[in-house]
Image 1 (cartoon, rainbow, N blue to C red):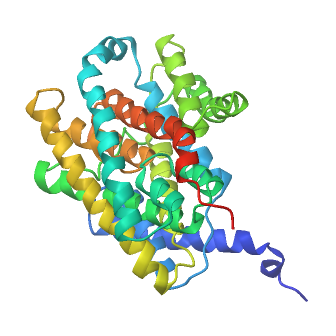
Image 2 (cartoon, rainbow, N blue to C red):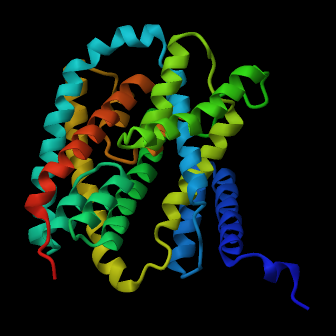
Length: 352
């Protein structure tokens, strides 16, 4: 007789195993007092399991759903007082344009001439935009989608892993504390609205073909609800904890099935590029801080080219100015995404 476990589809068995691996990693990270333990613990555990060739599976659309709640969290921080501050961000936002151009000018020749990737793969590997968007554009231009996935995953993994330790060691920030008072009383009506704002905002953005729909749609919808006074709080700490866990797991799982050759080429190239990006980002932060355009914490989280969602999580825990951080990441995202179709014809690989 076939056991009930045998009747469970393989994909769900892999997802259950992945959840267990990530949970063990998060527990160990908490015991070791890692900063942002749910994010880094689940990420590192899934990364180690992937390198050991353990078969894992991401949550698929559920991971995207949790990313919508990251956007909802950011949207709740957009208040009338914050909107009045936005003109003050203009000088540092202008630097994002220069910063993104510098990244392209350094990254493309590095991947093309040093690491010897084809034109499409080199360009879309160099551009720190949304992962899904870079994979979509890169594949359409004839790039290697597996290489692009590993390079961008390595960029996000290394920068997101280093940032909390840097903040903890040099600023003494307690990144193990909850983002809000766990279990504190919440308004059921507002919580229900926030839970709906994620998928509804995503759906609306998809319908109007907005780039980065799972982030930008919920963010804009929730910001509107916050500005109009419909919601006045932030999602409960428990939901933010869940987001940390799922986002960390999703990054780690991207290494599933990685081979030694890919480690030696694609992952190594991604690691080398992460160092280059960190240097460029550090220079930008020094310029912003020296000009008095932002506090060091806000400048660091705004200009480090880690994943947009991952930087938001760290910003929430660290108590950064989310409006400043998110506006800079969104501008970088828009620049990279909107210029991609214009550049694609020039880097497209010839059909074989």
